[in-house]
Amino acid sequence: MTDSFGIGFVSAGFITRESHAPSVGYLPDVHVAGIQNRTRENAESLADTCREEGWGDPSVYGEDAVADLVADPDVDGLWVTSPNFTRVDVVEAAVEALEDGAELQGIALEKPVARNLREANRIVDLVEGADLPHAYLENWPHEPDIDKLRTLLWEQGRGAGRPYIARSQAEHGGPHSGWFWDGRKQGGGALTDMLCHALAGNDFLLSDPNGGDDLEPVSVSADTETIKWQQDDYADQLEADFGIDFRSNPVDDYARTTVRYEDEDGRTVVSEATGSWCYVGSGVRRTIELLGPEYSGQVLSDDESSSVFFSDELGEGEGWAEKQTATSGRMPIAAADVVTAGFVAENRDAVAAFRAGENGTLDLSDGVRILRLCMAAYKAAEDGADVDLRDADLEGYTPPPARE
Ligand SMILES: NC(=O)c1ccc[n+]([C@@H]2O[C@H](COP(=O)([O-])OP(=O)(O)OC[C@H]3O[C@@H](n4cnc5c(N)ncnc54)[C@H](OP(=O)(O)O)[C@@H]3O)[C@@H](O)[C@H]2O)c1
Figure 1: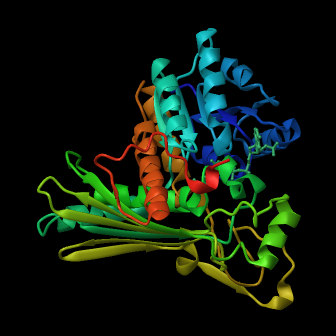
Figure 2 (figure 1 turned 180 degrees about the vertical axis):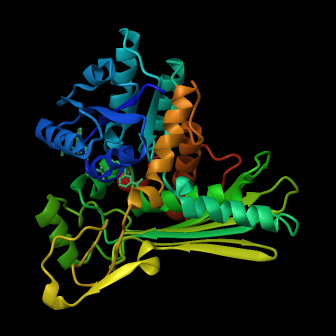
Figure 3 (figure 1 turned 45 degrees about the vertical axis):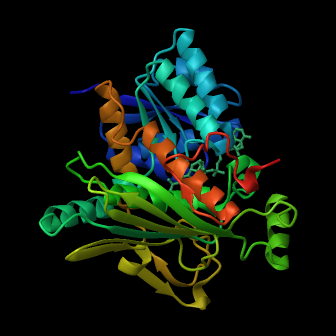
C-alpha cells in the first residue's frame, strides 16, 4: 500500500474546481492536501466540496500564502493552476520556500507555462535550479481517445509510412473570467488560450509513440484576427461583464497557424491548427485529425458522440457543460469528462513520475516548445511572413495583444 500523495493547488478557479480536484476521485492513492487562493472563501468552498466528495480534507491558505502551502507537510506536489500572469511569482515563492527547508516531490503547471518565453525560461531555471521534478499540464495528449488514435494509426500504418498531416480545431464562445480577455494579463488571445491546445495535440499525434523520432519544427505561418468581440454589442457585453475595454485593447478571438516540420529524412510534415472564441454551440468544439499515406483518423467534439435535446420550454437552467452557451437545444452529456478529457490520466502520470523522482511524460520543456510555436505564430501574423524556427530569436518577443 502506497502512502497517499497530497496535491496542493495554487488557485481555486474553474480548472481546479471542475477538472483537477474531481480527477482525484479517480486516483485512489491521491488526495487534495491544500488549496491556496487570493480569495480565501473560494478556497474554503472548494475545500468543503473536497470533503463532501471524499477527495481529501485540505488545509486552506489565503492571498500571498504560496510559501505556507509549500511548507505544509501534507503537500507532496504543487499544482499551479493560477492565471498566466501569476506564474513567475508563484514559482519564485515556491522555490524560496524550498530554500527555507520545505520539501516537495514535484511541481506541475497548467497550460500555458507563462505569457512569453522570458517568463517560461525563468520558471524552468528556477525549477531545475531547485532540482525539482516537473510536469506540464496539457490535457489533450492525455485524452484516452487522442492517445488511442495516435497508437492505432502509428502501429497499424507504420508499414505505409509515418503520419504527415495533423489538423486540429479548438473553439468555444469565449472565456469565463475577465483576465483572459486582457492580453497583458493572459499573454495573448485565442491563440495562447485555445490554439495552444491544438498545437500541442498535433505535436503529440505527429510524434512516434515508440520514441526516437526526430521531428524538427522548421517554419510557421499564421493569421490572427479579432472577428466577433470587437463588434459594438459584444464589446459592450465584455465591459458590462468584466469591466474590459475591448475596443481600446482588443486581442485575437481567432487564430490560424500552419507549422511545417521536417522528419529525419528531410520530408515535410504539417501541423494545421485553428483556435477561436467565436464558436456558439453546445460547449467546446473540437475536431482533431491525423492523416498518413494509407490511413486517417479523427476525434470529434463530445457533443457529437453523446448528447441530449431539450425544447425551449425547458430553458432557463444554469447548464453543466464547459462553455455551454444555452440551456435548450442539443447539449453534450459530458459524463465523467475529467476522464474523457484527459485530466485523470495527466494527473496520474504526474503523480507517478514525481513519486519516482522523475519528470512527467510531458514536462516544462514540452510546455516551452509549444509556447515557442505560439510566439512564432504571433510574430508570423504580425509580420505577414513565415517565421523560420531554426534561427528565430523569440526570447524577447511579446505578442501585440500583450504589449503595454
Ligand atoms: N487545460 C484546460 O483545458 C484548461 C481549461 C481552463 C483553464 N486552463 C488554464 O488554467 C489556468 C486557470 O484558468 P481558470 O479557468 O481556472 O481561471 P479562473 O476560473 O479565472 O480562476 C482564476 C483563479 O485565479 C485566482 N486569481 C485571479 N486573479 C488573481 C490574481 N491577480 N492573483 C492571484 N490569483 C488570482 C482566482 O481567485 P479568486 O477566487 O480570488 O477570484 C481564481 O481562483 C489558466 O492558465 C488557463 O489557461 C486550462
